[in-house]
Amino acid sequence: MIMKQYFYWTDKNPLLYLLMIFTKKEFGDAGNKIVIEEYLVGEEASVFALTDGSQFVVLSTAQDHKRIFDGDKGKNTGGMGAYAPAPLVTPELLEKIEKKVNIIIEDYYRTKKFKETTICCIARLSPNKRVGDLIQAVAVVKKQIPDVNCIVIGDGDEREKLQSMIENLQLSDSVKLLGRIDKNEDVWKKLKSSHIFCLPSALEGFGIVILEAMACGIPYVCSDIPPLKEVTNNGQGGLLFKVGDSKDLAEKMLSLLKDLKMFV
Image 1 (tube, helix red, strand yellow):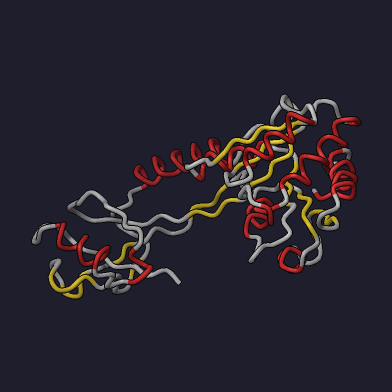
Image 2 (image 1 turned 180 degrees about the vertical axis):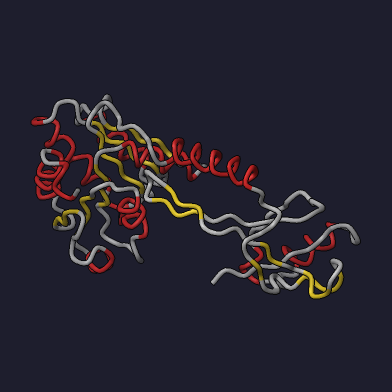
C-alpha cells in the first residue's frame, strides 16, 4: 500500500514539515522518502496511455479536483472525483502529448539489441543471489558462443570475490559488474537491449525482477526455487534450472541463446 500526503509550503516554514516527517515520524516508514515538486498555479489534466512496447493508445483525458470546496478552498483531499474528457486538453495539445509519448517509447521501449549476444542479471552481489554460478556458467557458454557477454547490475559485499572469479576464469572481456545504476530507465534500457535475463538466486521473496524482464519481452533463465516457480507459473516464458547447479544453468542458457524465438 502506498500512502500519500500533500503539503503546500506557501503558508508555513517547510522545515516544520520536514521535522514532522523525518524526526517525529508522524507517517512512519511512509515518510522515509519525500518528493518536492514545484508549486504550479492553474488547471491540470491527466492523459493515460496503454502500450505494448511498440505501439500505444491514448485513453480519454480527465481532470480531477483536490480541494474539498469550490474556488480552491478547503483541505486537500487527494481526489474528489473526476470528469472526462477534459476541455483543457485541446486537439492541438493532445497532438503534442502524443508526440512526447512516442519519444518516450522510442527511448525506453524500442531499444536496439546489443551487437554481442548478451545475458543480463539484476541482483545484489550477496551469497544468496549466487551470481558466481552465473559467472561459471558463462565460462561454459563462451566455449560455444565466443561473443557472449554478461552484464551484472547491482552491488554488494561479494563484488571483490566475484571480480577475482571473473579474472581467474579469464572472462574480464566478457563479464562486467556494472554496480548500482541509479536511474530505473537506464536499468530497463540495458535489460531491453540484452538477449536473455538470468536470475540464479537461492533466496527470493517474490522475484519481481523476473516479471519486469517478461514485461520487457526478454526470455529468462532462473533458479527453480519456489518463489520463482510460482511467479513464472513453473517456467512459462523462460527456463528453470536447478539452483546451485552452474552446469545446468549453462545448458539452459545455451538452449535459449541458440533459439531466441523459443518464447516469442
